[in-house]
Image (cartoon, rainbow, N blue to C red; front, side, top):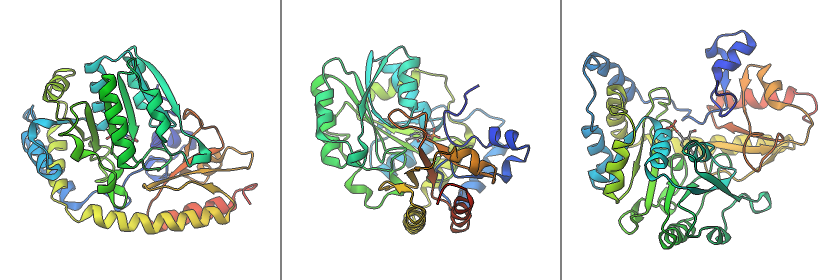
Length: 358
Ligand SMILES: Cc1ncc(COP(=O)(O)O)c(C=O)c1O
């Protein structure tokens, strides 16, 4: 069993509490609190009646919609069963011997590398520097490095990497003969995302792969839909052949097309997240909890009390993410999602009730 590897495990939490999974308030997974747009839900439901047929093996309509939304050619797009599938396909196709990942970061980069027999090496992000990537990462990219993963904004820190540093990394990777994978799965939750996105560098760098997810911003993690983009068309073709066909269900394809018609949704989401994140950070700080500067829909924090806060919160029906299994963090760090106003208030009140937190 995959245990405690990620947030979102309301199933284990419900078993533990002997309650229904829908009764758990899940702050451990970072999903848009505004929920699934109505049109997306409708498209997914309607597609059930076509599900007695195989889905389009090439996800044509969805790929066309992504190409228009991202302003990239259709043959630069690979659609996947969640962004996680893209990560594994990239590694399985490229077969690197060594990959560089930041620590902490989303654990599936190192899991994909290890499962493909590659060595994962780490660039430690320093708490004293707000977990920011600095120029010295360039010294870690050499001819032995075959792939580099950068998460922007980073999970779990919420920290952004500016485009200048990203481009230096991509360029150094090119010199070293390595691919750079920039994971922008949470960038839609950040303000001024154009300042940080490297999608418009795809044309310039054929060693660049940009990763995106529908799961988070359109709140469809259960439907599973993600994609990656690269101007290296050989790589995109290779990804298609590096796993089973029909990897994106008819339901996911329809939901994705409908989602991309929701032009105002991301704008509304960013406004909501900004306001709620500010509220949560202020309240956490009042409780003497150390927070880090997040630009995403989640907050990393550190407690000084010698308690298992995840267990304590679970007793109150609230699931939070312990960060003890992230590289370079320990059991004093936790991550919470920014959820609805009502849920955020419940979380703060629950924290106030926990002995030893004050
Ligand atoms: C940074 C990051 N990238 C990718 C993924 C995978 O997302 P998906 O659910 O679309 O597979 C996650 C999931 O939590 C994530 O945190």
